[in-house]
Amino acid sequence: MSICYFNEGFLALQHAVDMSIAEFITGKDPSMTYTVEMQRMPYPPFIDDTYLVALQAWLPFVLLVSYIYPAINIVKSVVYEKEKKLKESMKIMGLKNYLHWSAWFIKSFMFLASSTSLITILLCIHWHGPGSLAVLSQSDPSLVLVFLLLYAVTAICFCFFLSTLFSKANSAAAITGLVWFFTYVPYTVLRPRYASLTLGNKLALCLLCNTAMSLGCQLTSMFEGTGSGIQWDLLFSGVSPDDPFTLAHVFGMLVLDSFLFSVLAWYIEALWPGDFGVPQPWYFPFMKSYWLGRSVDEVKEPVTPPVQNSMFFEDDPKGIPAGVQVKGLTKVFSRLNKVAVNKLDLNMYNGQITVLLGHNGAGKTTTMSMLTGEACLPGPGL
Ligand SMILES: Nc1ncnc2c1ncn2[C@@H]1O[C@H](COP(=O)(O)OP(=O)(O)O)[C@@H](O)[C@H]1O
Ligand SMILES: [Mg+2]
Image 1 (cartoon, protein in one colour):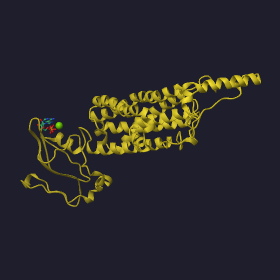
Image 2 (cartoon, rainbow, N blue to C red; image 1 turned 45 degrees about the horizontal axis):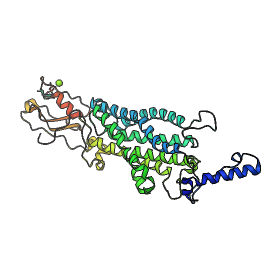
Image 3 (cartoon, rainbow, N blue to C red; image 1 turned 180 degrees about the horizontal axis):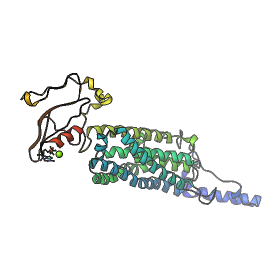
Image 4 (spheres, rainbow, N blue to C red; image 1 turned 60 degrees about the horizontal axis):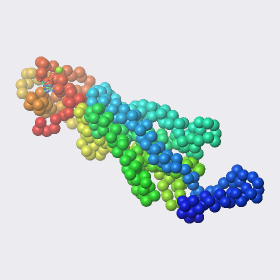
């Protein structure tokens, strides 16, 4: 059947004529006993409902806006900890970096999971009992929940990645809001051209977490349009024979995105820990010391400071490894061009208590800040 007949109203007229003939012969209202489905081979029959078109456009947007506040909040809190030196202080006290991130992840996920469950209920509940309408009338609520939870995980990882790019909480919050919208813009532009996109295009678009979510919503609305709704057994099937893009692709890309954003967050944070902390060189993933740490035995023999006046220097203890070795440590405050610490050589030995003594302004605090990573270590020549 040509779609033309449908648009011109020919089919509606023919249907009305058929119905009245049937009614004339049987004496009953035929619309109660049979319905007419129209389909264009090889496509499945579809429900022609402008509501579904509106759903495609608005569902992703509503979800985008629902998650923007949590996203901004996550980025802001993580950067705030960094800005106020809280993270660095906790690390000095022995907090492992992965534990810090895991704690943030669990906290954010618990918040997002509860609001996501609420969103799923609102989308899938049939308010006036079974058979009445819902936003997603046909879809399996458990599948919608899994989809939205996966999106929440990706959103958290994306926020972690964004948080590593900033050192000030307020600017981070403002820019996160913008970036959140920009990761959705490609979808608004490409939605009307959905049919002309290839599978590769769609997968590439899924690298942006909000566009991935939008494409998932679009698939869900399109499955609503076929009358089946999105179901677990349709996870690996496309909506129409010529569209190989499935919800499984979206799920896969969301998992991949989470992984990529986490790795980026880990790498960028190590390279650029913000205003405090010790940055790693770019090749740090290939360094043995990053993964295993350096054992005390590996450290070379203690450096012996050049003896200026042996009367004032105690001999180094023999046979005890130096746990901390400082060689030529220097700090110049560039603003005042003030030399705070000048070529300090020092060994701190295992099992001994080492104390820094000195008059005010001798540089004790600056030395400790540099050793703990609270002040950035000056590079050579500073
Ligand atoms: N942020 C800073 N900017 C400029 N100079 C500083 C700064 N912090 C410390 N100094 C200077 O560096 C020197 C060493 O300071 P500090 O390490 O605090 O000494 P101490 O803790 O031994 O009293 C002092 O002369 C101090 O004025
Ligand atoms: Mg001091």
